[in-house]
Every structure is written in C-alpha cells, then in structure tokens.
Image 1 (cartoon, rainbow, N blue to C red):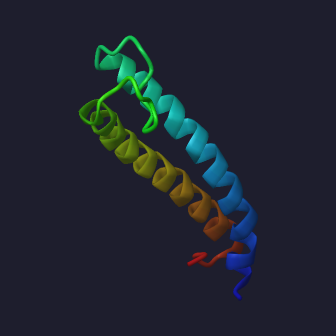
Image 2: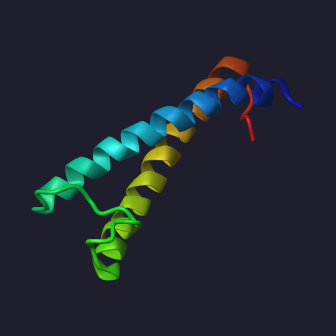
Length: 88
C-alpha cells in the first residue's frame, strides 16, 4: 500500500462523516427553498404516499452524492499535496 493511501485512510473517514453532515444540512436548506415548510418525508413515513417519498429522495440522493464527492476530492487533494502522490 502506498504512503498516500495510508495517509488518506483517516482523512477519507473524516471526510465521509463531514460530507454526510454537510449534505444533510444542504438538503434541508434546499428543501425549504423549494417551498416545503415541513421536513422531507422518510421512506417509512406512513402518512406520506410513495410519490412524495420518491420526490424527496431523488434530490436528496443527488445532493448527498455531490457534497460527499466534493469533500472526498478535497481530502484527496490535500493528501496529494502532503505526500506528492495521488491516494488512488
């Protein structure tokens, strides 16, 4: 295993946690900007129909993927600058 990969492991774990929290915050704000006063429905919310759940899940997935990818990319870039090699 390369040194950059070893150095990236704790960075990747931290980036994943930070990215997940940031994605949740970003999605909540986006949901409010869409004019939704209440929280997005969960998949197990029995008072919401399937369409509402899927309508909320789609942008939530996009936001989560984009934010976590951006945070992971920043972490990999930092490790590359410190070690001189890309951690992939």
